[in-house]
Image 1: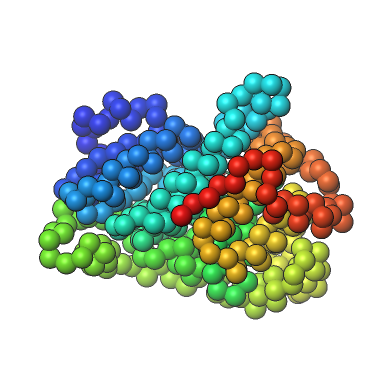
Image 2: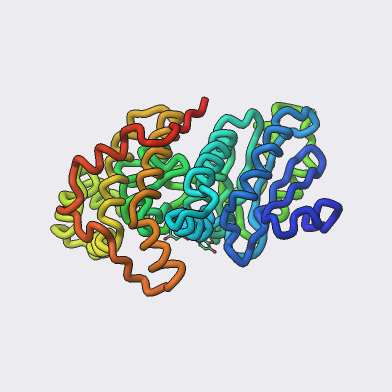
Length: 368
Ligand code: QUE
């Protein structure tokens, strides 16, 4: 599978490779030094290729995996968006704060509606944009090396790429917990919350890809073929720690304000609950309130309406300061001390939060 054949020259510098092996279309996210973080050039190559593969009867299924040992995909290329946004405020830039998210959410939607099996081999880090590239497909294979998280509230954003649609479907109040604390799930947790659909051993992932690429697609429906192949590699990753946390997670995150959730976490005797409260207190206060409202609304909404909601919220985030401050503090200066504006929860008004859900001074993103 790692053959550097014709396609290889084309991949270099672009960050994504495409191969057809048997009747399997293989996507390789290939920026290992940047943990395969998703750039707009990668998105712009993925979208036409998925359209082509959807229409091509020679392609039975698609598999996507990450190059390198560490990551499936660490998220969107937020540093590029940050740099372009700063340039834009100075009168230059390419408008990445709009175009990146239009491209990314449209790609997520293409995967959501993809008419064939789409198999993500999530052997390593999958956060934010990596979740968006995988969760919308039919099959997500996790391993003992999987780390899955929705950490956006830590950089002045909110759980997007379909997070407002997916997280409310997690057991109990676990989705709110994941979105508001950026809790890192391991493989068993990933299976428990419904992110993973299948489990395999990390050192068999290459064999899974080989088995898919040599599968006999003629005998039954492609979805059944993929199910049978993945069943051959199935392992029990063990119990999910999150399952044991349900009592305090459900009790605290059942409250309908960020302040009430924090009070409930503080009031428990559970050490992990206190750690979660401490984590939330490091997040952008505006992001926490936007995220809770978005997850509450998203629970009642169709997927395509969640996309429009997320795009509106993201444009609000791009117009505010917390995203730029979060990237500066976590990924540029690495002082890990973001100065959020406003700095505390009481200063974030309900009016500001409601306004972020309304149409803005930009074209809505509508997907079908
Ligand atoms: C929250 C995020 C992201 C993050 C950190 C957060 C994110 C993302 C990256 C990231 C990591 C490594 C890279 C890179 C980006 O970090 O989305 O380019 O090399 O992509 O707290 O949402």
